[in-house]
Image (cartoon, rainbow, N blue to C red; front, side, top):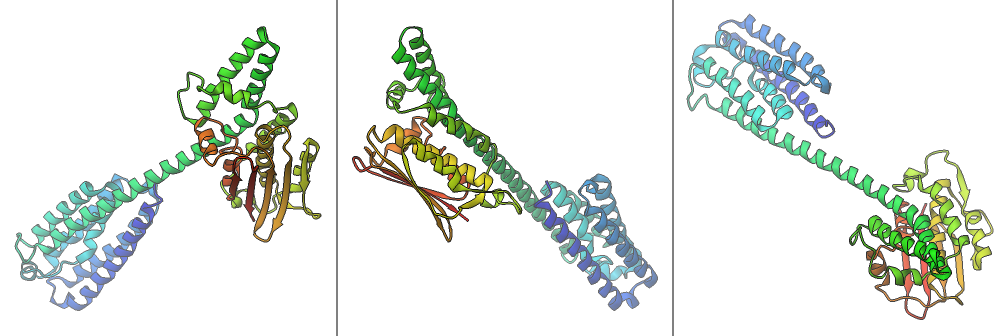
Length: 411
């Protein structure tokens, strides 16, 4: 995982270069007072060369292992120890700056980023020991460097671990969301085809009697179990208590209503995550009118614009499948004498499809109860599809006043 670690390594690069520049400035100002000035320039040259080498090496994640970390620490420690013979020893004992100054903290930061607080603290302690050796002891005047390095190692290590943990949690959340979307897609396909077929088999089996009735009973049990599985509510091993009543409420299921839903499974293979995902440059476009007009043959009054309503083909297929599910719900629940109207509108900000019936209507809490019971017609086949397209679904209904389902898909 280098997504959130990357900025930390880039920050280390900036720190290393800035610290090198500061050490060079101090060298220019103080080299005349050194015991061996040429040695000071030699150390600055080594620091500059290693800054280039380390920066290029740390830029590649596969190189950030123990060999590079150990070499980084060794070079920094060597430059620090060289101060003992180059800088005035009396000055070092009272807190004068060493040759590398803040640059010596670069490997501490690298160790902290790569291994967290513990590794950063180890690097800081090792360089702190070298600093004590250079200054011939540990005193209040010489304690600032080792203490600051220890704080840097622990602090940066803590931040690095938090960043890596956050990235891991983000990755798990993304995977969970992807799995949830895939589950919802499969649930829509199952509802649109398998569950309706099982309900039809149960109803027809009960009507025919004999061995067909036993087949219908088994189909009803499997329908209830499958509903519980795809909705993750209730026990999976037994049918829901109201499974029989639920099947008896679907006398209007007809093969004509099932077949379009089955055909829509081909479009369900596309996993939409939003309008941008389904609208790549040059994507094939489809006229939504041509996908909705066949519903007029099933007794639905269809009203659409005179001009084509063009959408990316995958988007149009998902919208058509959601509309088919809404019309199927109207046929099954509105009542035998109910009429159904379908209105397609092209607006400046998107496309709106309205499915309305003048049937029995439903109480406000009916949809929530249906979703809890595993009936996914609205929750997944309609709302789930439109939500994945970045759109919204509004359901308006009350007992005796029919139901209106409005689907809005933004451009």
